[in-house]
Image (cartoon, rainbow, N blue to C red):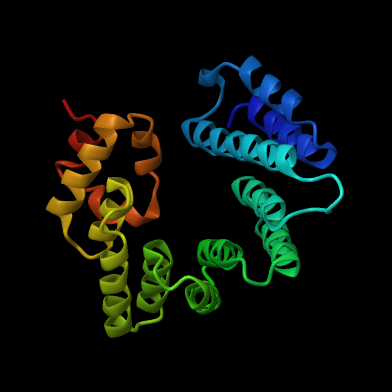
Length: 228
């Protein structure tokens, strides 16, 4: 770990606390990419992307109506990217206080619980999200993963069937993740190659995406990330 990584980490957290997004982005640009380890470069690029999202949310907030659910969701995403799951969960809870029908807040709670290994709790979060938005393929995919981790393969397969149904017109990347989770390596690699051909930046994320873990030992994985 280079010494620059902790300073960037501290700067991003400090920027969140004082809502000074410009300085965090400027600071990150001043640190050469080769001074951060690969995992840190990915992590902080995601964190800074969340900072930009949060700034966008702040820009559209009416000054006389307090904070929106979207505002707290974006704060939660930033905490999540910074490795602060409890703070992220608290922000998503605040989003639900503002708007109890915010299915995205339930989904984001599920993502954090899943990362922490709390699969039963994550599954409940995805189930609540699905109660509000039953045609969301990503929510079904999250639900299926949690059911699988809890040993319910039949329930997982049913959830993945629903995910496949509603992800039919979604991005090739999300469909690749679902195909990977279902053990359909050839289909997943073809979808991943198609997506990376248009979005080369996705290759670095794909190398660490847990939904694609089943593909990483496949001889065609790296080729899919760098399609001709």
